[in-house]
Image 1 (cartoon, rainbow, N blue to C red):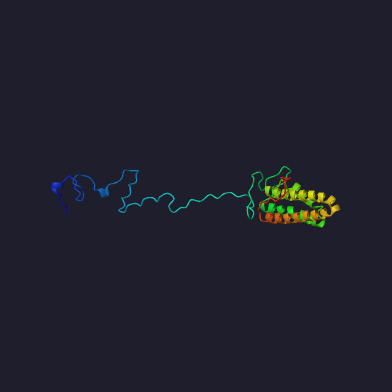
Image 2: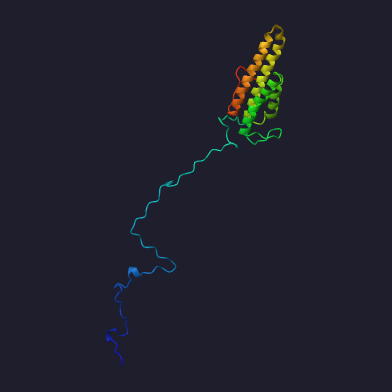
Length: 209
């Protein structure tokens, strides 16, 4: 059975009922140019503004640099001439703060013990030895060793003057008074050094700095 073509549309294409009369495709069926990705459809929700700078993020606070070994208990200023671990002119290293406190205390205790055991004659030797060995190994230990040596120098001067005065009995009083004052000053100096504090003995000239 043959179908008779409709003479009205014979030789012509049937129009698409869904097509736009103007001949253009609807926007929903439009294709993007070849090689390009069509942009995403705009969102119905507005985009949130970017957070302000630094919001939710704390900037790290720079920490100051501290010398090796930390600061001693009580604290003491550094002159800037020596630093822990720095090599001295004799190839020795500068002591850290804890070691400087320790030897600053020994600078007073060693001559104190020597002075007691020798009736005041060897205290000067103990102070001098520590001063020579440790004067370049830290500002803190140097000052305490110098103070200890100054105490012993003053004590030695008073002891020498007291020897001839013993003929009139006054020398015995000045001799033991000088030892007693040196004893007290060394005790105070040892305590200050152990606490990490600089200290200058009263009524003592600075023969050595």
